[in-house]
Length: 434
Image (cartoon, rainbow, N blue to C red; front, side, top):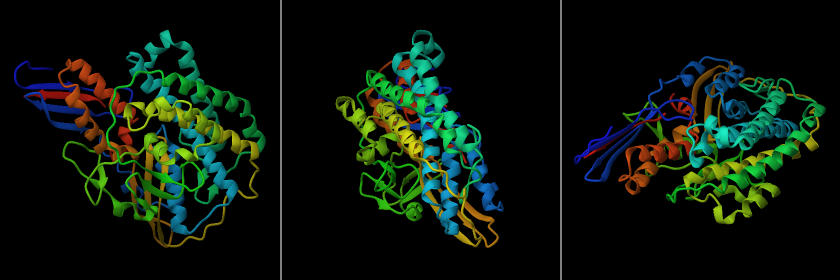
């Protein structure tokens, strides 16, 4: 594990509490960090390849299988991109239902990450099972918060995992208003529990670490970003999703089966996810979420990735608040989906998965069959940034014991909520000291 001479290697075999597997290699010379590699060794999954030749209506249900935690984001990103290719614009009632679907996924995903995956790091527990032994009320609150998100997904999508109701043009079936309003009391409880969650996580002790990120997120002029409009950054990018692949570039790296994303013009990393969304869209939070965030001004997440759990808690409040607002005013649309005239075309979309910006592009022939597909997940976009963060963090902790270095590095990577399987189209840690 470690050599006491001039050189040293530290190796963390598996990163726990993330989706998928990967490893981290660190090499030092004379106390200086010389190399950092985040190794992703899950096999490529070839989703883009086997989408070719499929009818466009099959695509949303196939892409939902890319991720079991955030299937809605993959499903709806495909829907939006295909609607752009076919010139389809659903009505306002369908649009609201889609935002409600996103709220449901944000609720269950953020609750899962906050309580089950990330909180144990800050409270000194190796797992949520150990955490539950001494903090049963908090863990029970997290489980109920997540369950409500799952219940909402079941009503909207037919089932909580890999929902099946969304389609190009709308929904195969829309819920009745009374079905949604049955969840009103649960959502009201969830809104208050989300506020309690924020009050809880801001008491955690976070490492002092604030890299100079370029934040990137979807942006909408009138609402907090979920599933529509432009892509912006803290360094001045403001583009239509059609220009995404011109501005951002995916690169192969030898040590990983996941692609790394960079700015095409300067080969630099960028950050997507809750920190980026909050930094770029704070004023678009709904009133209760904004008030709760402003009340913790001294502990705002800012640029500290370890405080990503705080950003997720703020977004959890927003998701509950918006879900309540939608079901209060929801009226069933006259038709669940619009008519589609099939023709050749190409379309793309950028939406916000809980983990960050997700990009899809599809080209269809005149029979509606997929000729080309491109999917860029949020974890792949953050992979280079994760390595950059580790390079900045390690000089300040490299003299510590190997076990402490491993724990801090794992914690940092977990703050990104990486979905390793999604990014391979966790943690083994090895440090070589020399």
